[in-house]
Length: 549
Image 1: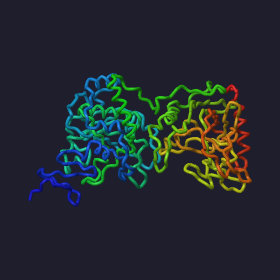
Image 2: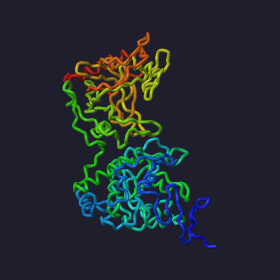
Image 3: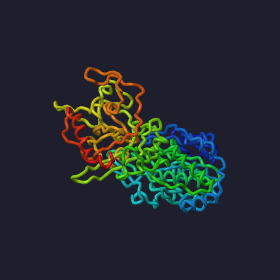
Image 4: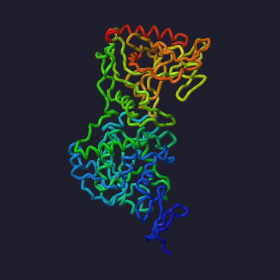
């Protein structure tokens, strides 16, 4: 007996192929095998197809589709081929980088824009991604991917370059998803376009390559993907419905779906699409692409009562990330707050860093030490205090990153109650984010320094670590030296037993000066308060003249 195309997937989840008959509904987003579209309105389809992909391909969860995109889906684009071609020329982008010469409406049968990541190159038995993976010299950042040439339309590298395998209107020879496989529904290829994005993966020992960078795409890569989406939509004549690869195949008959695209920042990408759309319509070229998360970066400034002009910038792109967090709750293209690798990282708009300068001096051997200086506000770190040890809060904990042995040989935290200490960023979802401040400055836990105000010099020790988007934080004791008593009540030993509320930051501005390499090995817990005062002032005296103090 000849089998027709079944009206539904069989109990085994296998689509039986034969003569066309009633439609089958394929996968979790319910692709209609005859109408060649997913179920629901364009907005309902996007909500299903753009669900955030969980690590290890463990599923996908709802996330909001930005309104700007949602209201435009499957509606006329309204951008002419001439306008987009002019934009590409003014921006220095060859048409072949985004699907070929722009011909409006030539790909009118397409409906879906599928976002993939390559999930390779695979990095075995490593904890960190290669330091050069976002550079053109990295081996994975090539436009030559022979295995993708007959499957995808476009490839985008992490340094923001792209190349066309197949025009948006072209018929591809091979499937890019399991849905398009010959054993499932090859006819589906006619309504999809596919863009691959280079994304290395770490393969832990005894596992598979599931660890992806955070965010999944670089800023320049994400922006090029946005431009590709606009180009594809103009070629179709309507705004395509975007989809993440995993969601296209999820629940389908061909086995487990791939786990991409991992760590895709939908909100940031839609912002990029919106910016390109506005620029094309205004006849303006693309804005310069840089690594600064915020366009609000200004020249370094510092208070009038100190002079940092003799110092050099540590890294203005990096400082710009703190400003981006202050103004837009974004850092290295990560939208905040965000829960990543089991930890929640918060934004900065409600408590801005105010890092208006991040500078350094190399020092002169035998004369003056190397130093790092930055301006900021000062929030409060309770870690190491009696209060934090007995009433831990959402972000407070008993221990500090620097622990010291006491005279009995017991490891103890540095007390926020009694020791003026400061904090540096050390926590992040990737090693690159976690190590960035330390890599740029050379600072380590236990290094000494001072915090400057208009009238005071307060010796400090670097004793605790905080999250990657935050800079400018100090202990209860430091705030006490600034004239802020944060203890509501104390015990007989002078330890805080309750804290004033709300526990707000001190606006400053403050200038923190730290001396890389100044830590003292073997420092005892009982000595830390006195040694911090001695060393901080000693080091400061060697450099104070250069600050006009």
